[in-house]
Length: 472
Ligand SMILES: *Cc1c(COP(=O)(O)O)cnc(C)c1O
View (cartoon, protein in one colour):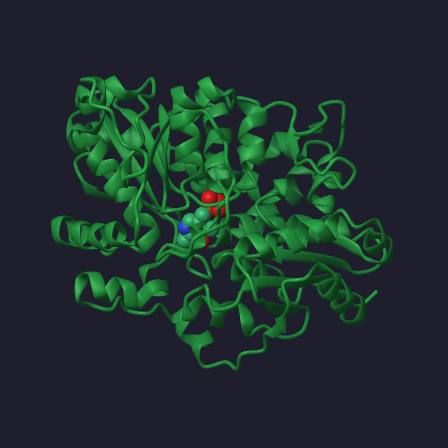
């Protein structure tokens, strides 16, 4: 596979280069495959569907062709995914895709574990330590830290916004030792991301250290996230006719989004032939993308703190990739979009719990409410000419090409549950009256001491710290 760049389509890079560089320091652009090859229809049409690992192998293969042999790729996938991506029905037209069964209880384990194994594979033939810098709005840091912990030749520095992530999240990423460490930055997630991006474009620093990113700007994190979209859409396509007696319903993936890496991975799965009719971008008050879809104007802005803190992103990195793949008109055909404020999030958690018995986390709750409003007349209202108001929480005034299938009751939603509700126990308890039981993986880290180093939100201070503390 040849990779190019979102800012200069003359760039040609291998998978190895794209993975090890993270982003293109010469252009500031993001790597992107030149094509998204379709899987064989005989593979996609299997009923029962292939296993998750089988899907993962077949989807990854074209992107690593000529650079990772099949047996090694199979080993990487077997080793990365000892846990499932579970599709759970909530009712006749809503499914939850549980992506929290990995070691850090959020969907980011799917991307981070593949990326760590691929980086380590390529780094075997390089000299010296590869330094991963990663900014996190909550769950990336722990997924990346956990995936890279004790991997020889790799070293991880995590930046997170002090006081702006949940207690469990902070414990998860500030308690690593050895080759993984955390910096608590006096600023927002966007500030953390800017520090990392500035470091990548700093030629002097790059001369001294081999640097790479582990944010969703890294293509090796984005590609594996497409596996579970393909897999769950095949599961739902095969079981929906039995569950709800619909013939060939439109499958809509509802994606709680912040940096839009997850949703971009969904677009890749659709390009590769997944039976997905469209997507709903579900955000919190950081509604840069819903506003863009509604108005056509893209205005990145400072991030605002919310209960769904892993989505507190005002300047989503993957906007640039979405724009490289699609025009605004394409996006409006494919995407519904929806946002909720904090009161709405709490009400949505309570509503999901009382109506379905399912305990959903604050991020997933926006997806639940988005899908529930859409299927209960949201699109019909827009179609009848009632103008939505984008300054108010709810559905963005945009009718995607699949709207009629929803209006005609021939659509099912797959709501991506991006984290385990116990990671946000106090909000969930407020909403439902019960604290969700804490999974074992999370209980273990609660007992460990906090090792994070305080850091000013200032590039020169950050750079000096890196020069003084990172191994050459
Ligand atoms: C990271 C994260 C998101 C947002 O994913 P993006 O790829 O940044 O859009 C949503 N929910 C949870 C729980 C997350 O950790």
